[in-house]
Image (tube, rainbow, N blue to C red; front, side, top):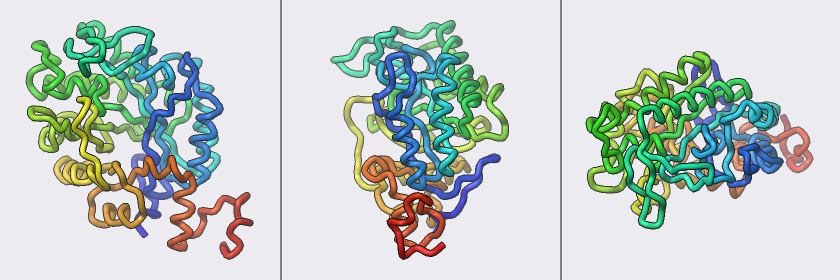
Length: 342
C-alpha cells in the first residue's frame, strides 16, 4: 500500500506518506512559548504513527502572529521550548517540520500592525493595514531568515513557509490585495518578489540537506484572483528555491471557499504535473481509500489528514492494523492488540 511506503526528500526519510498539517491550536503563552499542551498534542500524533508532523503557524515576529495565542519563533529563547516538541516527535519515529508565518493584514495581535502590501482590510470589520515600506519588507525578510536559523537550531527536519490563507506572503502574491506600483507590485514577477527574497534569505542559512517548502493557496475563489494557472506561474518563478508545495486554497477573502471531500486535490495534481514539484494534498481527506487513490494516480506525493488527526490521533496505527501493515503499534500499547504478532 503506497500510503505506508517511505518517502525521501533531500536527506529526510518519512516512514509513510501520512502528514499532520499545520493547524492553529491557540494554546501558546502570550510570549509565543509552547505549553505542555503542544508537547502532548504533537507527541500524541507521533505515537499514533504519522510520518510527518508540521507544527502550526509560528510567528516570525510578535505582531506577525495570527493571534496572541499563537506560537512564536522570533527569539532565541524559543529554541529550547520548541526543541522539546521536536524531541518527543523524534522519539516516537516521526519527522517534524515547522510552519513559519507572518499574518499580515489578518493579524489580530496587540503587538502592532496589522501590515499588508496595500491598505486594504480583510473585511469591513477588520482594521485597515499599514502599507509596508521597503525598509519594513527588508526587516520582515530578515525575520524569516532568523526564524529559519532558530528552527534548525531546535532540530526541525524541514521548514514550511506559509504563503497561503490570506496571510502576508499570499497577500503580496494576489492581485486582489496587492495594489503596489513599485517592484513588489504589478506584474506577477513583481508580486512574487517578496516571497523570492524570503526564500533566498532562508536558503542562505537553512541546511541544503533539509527540505524547504511552501504552503500556497492555489485558488482565491474570486474573479481576478489567483487560480490554478496563475499559481503554476508563481511557483515556476521561484521553482529553484522550493523543494515541495503544500497545496491549499482560499483564505484571502472572508467567503468563497468550496469544501467537499478532496476539494483541493485537483490543484495539487495540476501543480505536481505542470511545475514538476512534489506536492502534499490536503482538504477533507478523511480515509485511507481516498488517500491511496490520490497517491496511486500521481495526484500528490504525500497526503495530509487534518480534521481526521484531530479526531483520532491513532489514525495511522488503526489504518496500519486494517491493512495488516506491521510495525505501527507502539510497544507500550501492544497488550491492546493481542492478535498482532510481529
